[in-house]
Length: 324
Image (cartoon, rainbow, N blue to C red; front, side):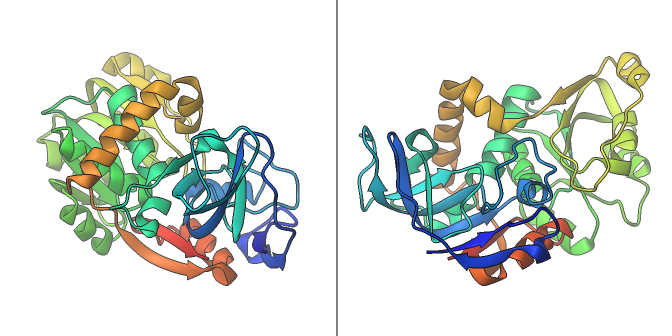
């Protein structure tokens, strides 16, 4: 089979497509014939040896995929060969086949196309967990989403509106902000043209925001945190802009605010029943047409490195996919 391989840590341009042996599922494992794989920010880190999980070289990146179960290992009872399914793999999905634990594979509803399935779980489940369990976002509160046109950002805009919040979307271009408006944003801030703190003052009438959803980090973190309202919650989701910020902790004291970490992957392992309930709610919203995942770019497997570069350069709006 063909796979996009990281043979040495480095930029996505170093990735190569090679023929490798077809993996065989072991006890409790499932093999998926991959049709579509989702590209996510962790893919940009894992190939540079900057992620929390460090697979042995060579490996294929790619943390989520949709396709068809084509082999099962001993003891697998919940899935059958020929069944459409999506898999959360951690890595390995940028390949024609991937093997992972049965617990990481779930059937795809008949109404859900492969391209939506391949790009749904990581972005929507991260944002849902962040806003529901970590921020405990309430109807009528104000939510600021940084990097709002990216995968998790746009999902946060949608989910925030569904939860009854006033949503302020912040992004770097008018095109991105127009997309955020389509997905429910009440106010927008172009932080490439307007000072972020001034934009927040304008959008909130000087009251500040109750919740900051931050997958960006870097220079945007401190001005956003300085604009948080009393008893606000600052969600640390990621650092897509580069540097990990160092926030002055006296601000948390003065604001009575909380800095809250969001690690969705660990949450799914630590609280599987809550995660399952979250997924049921998300899928019910999707089936009801309340969520409309946006796919902005598709790449073939041969151009998988370009897909990751697209993500690294922050060109993605909504979801980027690799079609196998």
